[in-house]
Length: 371
Length: 74
Image 1 (cartoon, helix red, strand yellow):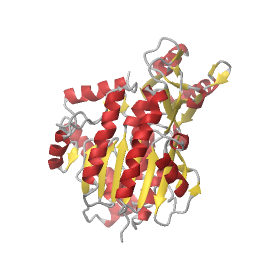
Image 2 (image 1 turned 90 degrees about the horizontal axis):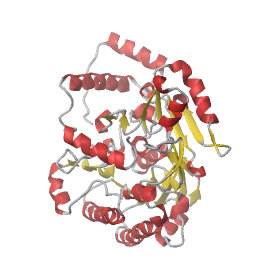
Image 3 (image 1 turned 120 degrees about the vertical axis):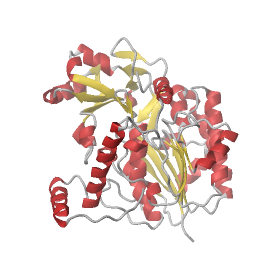
Image 4 (image 1 turned 30 degrees about the vertical axis):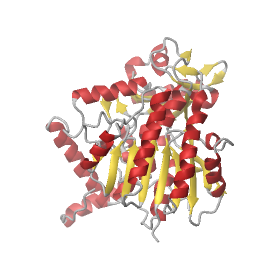
C-alpha cells in the first residue's frame, strides 16, 4: 500500500501549547510520534510556509516578507519548487500560494487572496463548492469569525479527503489570529481542533502518516518596540528603509555594522530586547541579495513584539497580546514511526514528506529528512 | 511546473556550468537556466504592465487592509 500523508498546519503553535491535559488527541499524537521544536528564522508567516513546503531558506525561494515597501509579494515571486511539484496534493490555505498554479491535485490559495472572484482555486470548478459554503480566506478579528473559519475548514477536509491524493496539506490561519489578539482564550480553539481530530483520525485509517506542524511558535507579549521610531531617534532615517516586518534595507551599506550594534545594544529596563540578524546569518542562495540587510526581531520570550503607529519606541501593547516565537512545533505519527523527541528546522519537513512518499530528495535544499 | 526538454549550444552550456561551479549559487545548470527564464518572464510581465492573473487595484487595497488589521503594514 502506498503512503498517504496528512499535514495539519497551525499558523503558530508550540509543543507546550499542544501538550495540555485538556487536549487528549494532541497528547496521544505526541506520545506516539516524533515530536520537537521546529526552528523558523525569521518567524514570519510569509517566509516560513514557503520554506516549509520547499525545504529552502528565503535566499532560495525569494519570499522575504508579505511585501517590499508597498509592493505585495505573491506566489509568482517564488523561485523554488514545492511539494506539489513532486506529488499529487490537496493544498488548502497555504500562505503565499495566491494566485494558484495548475497542480496535480487541488489547490485553494491562502493568505493574500483578495476574494473568491480571483485566481484562487484549481481546478476552477471547485469554486462552486467554496461559494456554497460561504468560504472566507481569512477570518475577521473576532472570536465568532475565527471559530466559523475553523469549522468551515473542517468542511473542506471532509470533502477533499475523499479525493485522490498522496499529500493533503491544510493550514489553519485562525490560530495566528486568535493567539495574536485573544491569547488568553486560545485553549478553547485548540480543544475544537482536538475534538475534530479525535473522530477524523478514527475514521481515516487510510492516512499512513499524520503531521502537525506550525510555521512558528507563539507566546504572550505585553510590550511593543517601534523600529521606525528607533531609527528616527538614532538619526538613521535617511539611510534606511523599513521595507517589511522588522526588515531594514540600507541605502548606505557602510553603516550596517553600526546599525546592527546599536540595535543589539538597545535596552529596556536594563535588558537587551532585540534579536538582530544581518542578512548573511539567515539568508543564503541566489536571491539572498534581494532580502533585507538586517532583520530585527524583538525577544517575544521577554514579552516584546514589533509595534507600528505608536508614539514611543517602547509602549504597552494595546491590541496584540500574543506574538510569534522562533520555535514552532512538529509532531509526526504513523507507520514505522518510533516515538522520539528531537529538535528540527522548518526546512526538514519537505525532505521528510518526499522520503515518506518514496520520492528522490533534490540536491541543494537546506533541510534533512526527520526519518 | 511544466517539464520541457531543450537543446542548447555546448559552448553556452560550458559558460553556464563554469558560472555554476564558481559562484555556488545554483546546484545545477538546469536550475540556473530556470532562473534566467524566470528573470526574462518577470521583465516581460513588467513590460506588459503587470500580470493579469494577480491583483486589480481594488484587490490590492483589500489585501493591504487585511495586512494592516493584522499589524503587518503601516
